[in-house]
Length: 247
Image (cartoon, rainbow, N blue to C red; front, top):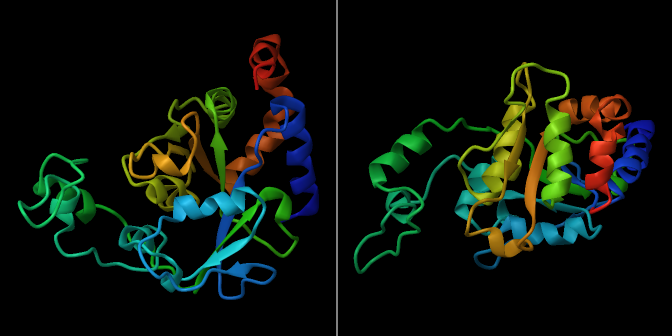
């Protein structure tokens, strides 16, 4: 991460957003230096809940063995297979055997959903999460994740569409917490027109954040453009200043 870009964002984040929580970032690597490697999972765990430590300033590196959720391993790119019976788990379950989450109406719809999901095929061993201010010059983050309340989301959402006429500069695809914060924005980074993702609507992951927080995940290639537009955008207007006072 270039030092000037890092400093410029922090300066403008304070100027226009009153310095709410800094975003965290992630990238894949085989050499997670200056980062705590999370040990093998001893049971079920949710990556979104574990990211609380990153939001507080601790840099963490996860391997396949660190992730205590099959869905998490898949959406972070460390596994391709889905657990047996997943189509029933996500829908109405199996009587006397498995309780269903009932997020999708039928197993058939779940099969169709998973069949159409792209594979990440990550060759590196680790995914590294670092808060923005912890990034070093040798770090090359792929995506930034903002954990934000509605007024902050309003600013990020509007800025994401500042340089285009097509209205869907931000999307909100259905998915798990890690799917909306990691998987989908990572796919967007290689798009000809990268989009941001609003996420963390997954009820199973909602307990990992406060009730007024959603996520805004944006590929770095798009975020750097957004940073460069801040001083000429709506953020300089009286309309935004009224919102900014509440942040």
